[in-house]
Length: 164
Image 1 (tube, one colour):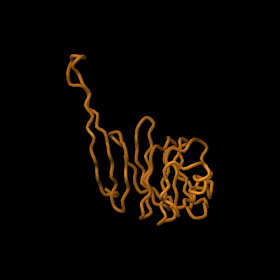
Image 2 (cartoon, helix red, strand yellow):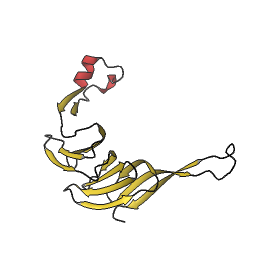
Image 3 (cartoon, helix red, strand yellow):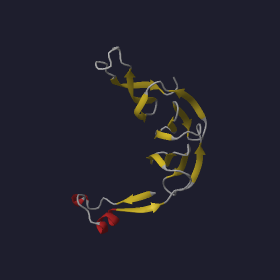
Image 4 (cartoon, one colour):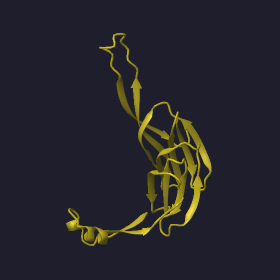
């Protein structure tokens, strides 16, 4: 659903009644296309697109202004857990099932590159030129004594050029 949001009275945004909430945010368009639950969504008014990912493994692309269906992307059929849309007309899709992968597409539906991930991605951003990942690296226990063994998790921020 695409909602209209009115900011004509932003002094009273806390504790809105149902009637006030309806005047503050009202549905404008309902978008269709997934056959399973939607897991993530990203919108941008610069390229006028909204992209949504689903457990059905599809990424649907619609125009924000009028809700017109643009296209569908099906990276691998596995559930889409995260996606990002850049102002430079790229879509980054993360899937996870047995393994985790990133797929970089143009908004025209052209697959630019695929990358298998070695670590758990917590979140991601897509800038005009770079992919920024927050990843958790889990190291296995080093001690042979089960009572003293610990698993350590290190979170890293990884920045790389989108075409590297």
